[in-house]
Length: 303
Image (cartoon, rainbow, N blue to C red):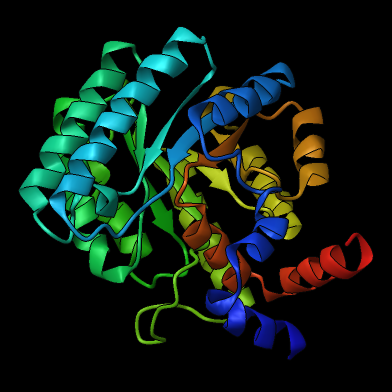
């Protein structure tokens, strides 16, 4: 209850206080910070995906600025020879303001990444964005078949059907590439599973469907039981090491991440950075209220 109260108070807390928590999970505010973190992860055999924070913009000038920023990020990452790709949120480019403008901005970013033989992941946001983001993915996938992927959230009751509906885009030569996560947005019970076990059960159902149908999944979880069950599915379907990867957030469950790597599985870490870190950090806290106690300990034990 104490942690939930703290979590409820988060939007009213000073940013300096939230930074006590955030600095462990955010690469920093600048591309230099993200490059430094990415290079360190690469040195440990970990691929990365870079994300510039700042979604749900309020005007299209912000969308244009975010596009320019991403084009610059791609140039810098390629110049630095970082082993990684890119993640972006369509609401950062005006999805809820003008879908066509959003598409044009993201298409330019995907084209830029594709020119380097690289890849862009379209993040999945809350439920009002699900259909337009799938539509956006479909459109880009047809033009850039090997350079764009999508996120699937297992707590949404529609997700398995979405995976089935997208099967027409899959081929042995260029497989559908999905990051499978549980989902973090607060959704109504009518459209989302709420209990831990049922979310996990549907996560594994979605993952098994992907393996059975030759998709390439990014197994994005910090949940040890899910990792153990994923191992079993990999064995069941005799999936080669090149046919999947595990994915984690920067700063989260490093010990589990290390164990997965030691078993020889590919690992990719999501590296967020940017001045708009506050919204990302508060969502992480709302997703896991137990983290609130770490903030209190940091304040009163370490000053």
